Image (cartoon, rainbow, N blue to C red; front, side, top):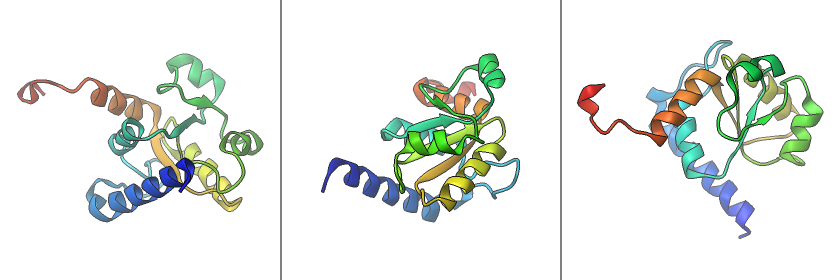
Amino acid sequence: MTTTVAIRAKFALLMAVVLAVATGALLAQSDDKPAIEPALAAGLLAQYDIAVIDVRSAEEIAETGVVGNAATIVHTDTDALAEFLGPPPGRAAILYCRSGRRAGVAIDTLEALGYDSLINAGGHADLSAAVAARAHPNPNPEDS
């Protein structure tokens, strides 16, 4: 099994487990809700080498920066997103925007082109906070 195939298989298995076991942590898909809790997305980022794409506008990104070393590709630039992901089915990626709506639009468009293993992590603020909390956990949970 090649490294890429092995990573995709592990990712698919992890996603199946997340969907089957942690359904309480999943949110209903809507225009203002992520498809996966930001804390779960942060866990995936910590465990796997998964691409991250910020699909917000340049103005929004200038105000807040990006999560980690996320690529910045506006959600309407399907060609640039496809080029970044490679030929379908592409590589696994986590997408986010301000609320999750534009990430969802981008994912819907890419899935229609044959891409899979794409995760909507919702909004920048929540994902950023989840990544920071994972990197610097509170040593005294009683202080929370």
